[in-house]
Image (cartoon, rainbow, N blue to C red; front, side, top):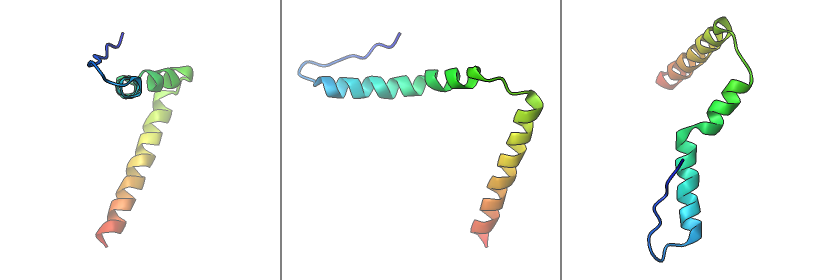
Amino acid sequence: MLIIPVKDGESIDKALKKYKRKYDKTGVVKELRKRQQFTKPSVSKRQGLIRAAYKQQLQSREEV
């Protein structure tokens, strides 16, 4: 449960914004989306290698 301290005279909009920020930081939605579909370890490893190669390619372009 998230607890957001609200100061006297603070608007509801500001408190709601604090709540949304704190909720995003917890990663609840990200975790739910991740759990909706199972990916095999070999597939996730392959995707990681592809991402790493892409990042390395971008870095080599910046250096030149």
